[in-house]
Picture 1: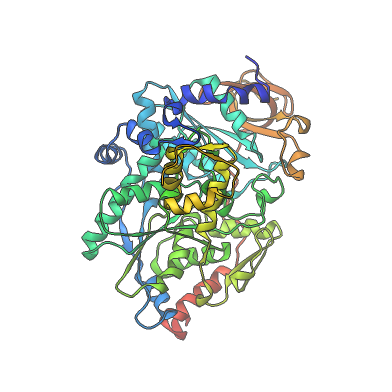
Picture 2: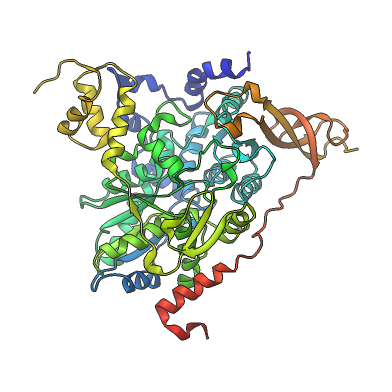
Length: 473
Length: 101
């Protein structure tokens, strides 16, 4: 079979179809409509079944911990009576050390059920270790494809540690230099091995997190007698926020504000061989968060089950220096040493806590394990070696790729709101590049995807040269 | 000479610069797309020669032999003293000025 770049890419859809066992065509109709809920429910797992599968495989039931000292520190910088109680869901205690075990558990369960011999996932982060760990339990072979090194063979310590963890769980790790052609090698491997595509973005990868949303509500009620006001999710590809929000919606009728948080990496190009080692966060950053929100279907499956715009109420960014600062604070004040990427949402929560009253509750929905390579000390040392200027000052002055600015004083930790309305408009703009016609169902699809109303969508599509069919009212 | 069945790492150019996809940043366009993978060496070979390996999942891959018994060399890195200053800032703010004495 022709294995040239163009030939393999042209076989993309058929390779995908046989490697996930999902016919995505079934859910596409009209001009741009995509039936997300039908795709999720056709996968056939109830929330209870998800929880049972996870409980039997070292996943879930992680503790919810109140960070009393961090909450007290936030109150010192808040108006009198303000400064919410901050809780963390200690997801580092899943097998493999992160909430990604929840996603991997369902993908591997499904792969085993369908009779696949192995699983493949394209990931440089915690998800690789999670898939490798779950694959080990099911006796599945496992290949993890990583974007790992720049062209000189220099790699982020965090990613190199992840390769070690994957190999410790018995996986083969295919390490690649920087570039979107990773997808080409990924397709070649799927074709060669006929393994299951354990993508983060299949329905399995997202429904596995619904248990996290459910648990954090149940835990919170058990410990405090009420539901939280706000849940903060670190956001990259959107699956974490989507799954958590869906789990919450299945567990409580109370309105809970869902906040996405990403590290601000503005100005760094994700496919740049030089920028690659200038960033100190390999996930949970705006380089993934924004493009995936505007076009969720840019992932490694034809249709992503991570659709954050449907659920997100507010989207904030924090700077690298703020996240490292709060990561160290978690060690220093709470005695909990965890990895920095998972603390993106903790940095945001620390800032947002000041907007809420003292008896209100914010839950940070994940932590991740830490170790050599994956520790903030290692990340900072690597940054300094790469010429990044590290100093105390105002985090607002941080320039991604040039500096990491720790807040000189605690009150300078300030999450910045992104304009969700303009992100929703960009989502619609992208959809309009795909069609010259729309009908009622397409309009409904846009309303659901952007979590807006007919007025918003109709007003927006007037900016584009599209023909409207059968529009009533 | 590295013996057959040794655990090794190989390196392979998957796409030369001119074969890479369009729409790449300049810095990426100028360099090849490279793969590193580990496995058992199928025949005795010299370092830097073209070899065939069997990976842990049983696949064959070819490439340049770069290393025998590839090690994990990542560490916590050189100490970053600013981390101590973070501790001082948050502890002083929460517990008062003498918390470090």
